[in-house]
Amino acid sequence: MKGILTKHDFWLAVLFIIFCVFYFGISSSMDEQIVAYPKIILTFLLLLSILLLFRSHKSMNNQEEISKEKAKKTISILLIIIGYLFIMNFLGFIVSSGIFIFTLMTFVKSRWHWGWRLVASFATVGIVYLLFAKVFYVPLP
Image (cartoon, rainbow, N blue to C red):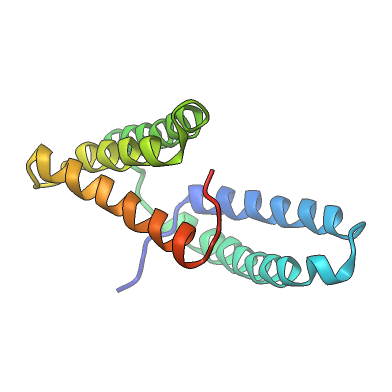
């Protein structure tokens, strides 16, 4: 199944290319041992962004416009993510992540009853916390 690439994909690719070039510039002044792995990831991201740029540029002429409903939904999800990042400073990772997952599940109209959505969202956060804090010994924000 072929996906439909849009002009938004083109601009997203341009944004990622700028991001990669910017962070390549920052990493050039750092110790090579420290930035070896991030440079590998940036290289893959840059290559995939260039591929997306060419593919979206080729298919931009053969596409239909994105509906206003899809655009509103995308902007709403972006605002939910920004809200999540904002409340994380005040409520901490566990509470804000639970609220974030519950809100997203509600926004995308999950078929689950609100009680199950609440349980699933905080269970997911609990599993992530246990995995990172107790198994990997990585502190969460």
